[in-house]
Length: 496
Image 1 (cartoon, one colour):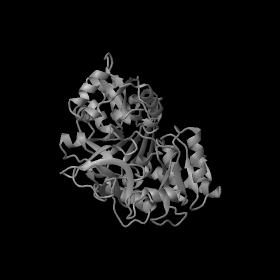
Image 2: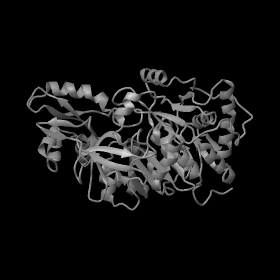
Image 3: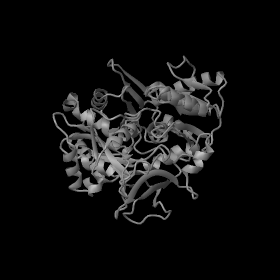
Image 4: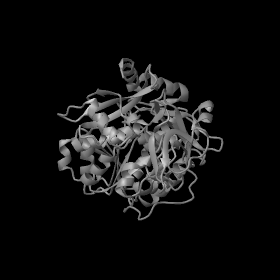
């Protein structure tokens, strides 16, 4: 049975209504493909997915799991994960993903906060007799479906929860990343917002998700792109960099790619240019947060400058404004905190009314904590998080601006700038953690000269710490929380 020619749309009350529609038109299309390190590949059609999920839902029901209960999934990205997620949905329970890379303290926090009645943390139980069209509970559009935990870079993770309508509204922001019949690479943990909230989009576009073997490796990702004729690649800057540097890239067939998506707190402009050249397809930059679900993005019609230096315009269903620290809404080119509002954003933090109140403005905008400005074309430029900004000699300094500029330094492979206090009238200084390129000798003088050639002199880092690699969070972003104590130590020893 062929893939439909247009997205599947309708007045669906919940995700299962949409799933039934997919089963009526494309039951034998592959929903998930899972290559493994042994060379074997597991495949699951939409019909098989629904059948397996209903059987497992019966097992959950027999265990006493009921509508409104929370059920955890502590599995790597795999077919079993999505079977468990769909089974949880089919009994009206709420799925909460627990990233296997979380430490025990983070896991304990998640369990204490969400109180799951069961956790899938190994092979799924044997369950048979599934009926893909069976309905075990009545579901409404505002019933909770998932709790997604933040990355935890500023403390213990917070649980953003979403209902069925959130997942439907998310599709309005997919844009060029979702075409009917795509074969889309999935490189991030399935516990991430980029997987937990995308099911509606994947179903309506009858997308085949190609799972990169866990733990993620450049070789595994390249093999999946080559062997599974991937049309949409996705990843964070670190992953693309590792793929390009891997010997296998030269022999990887990327001819089926129509678009490559990239997203993170910082997207090096030079990497975007390299992606277009080496992958031979359009590059889309995406910006969002766990809480926002969808936010802004570039389009395939944007010029290279827009793709390299902005995170694009708000998605069609998203309202964006920038708010100054004194409370007024920012004008063009004025830096402020990014506020977003859409039906796709989280409904709140699970069982945490106080933090939920803090997360939203009085008129319902999500306060992201990210700093940025909007240019004359309406594109958003990010300059960092308000928690990362530091004040040197009375001037606000945004690390991401310096990091982006250092991307053009011939001897810098990766960079992270962290502000740290000093016992000096300057107040704070910038400590640069840099990974030199192979064979290069990096000096503080060369770094400062490079920055001062284009930016204000007070933005030039005061301390250079060369490292072999930067610490990353479980989602592949630079973990500045780990770098902060090291920056404080360097600042304590710094002399003007």
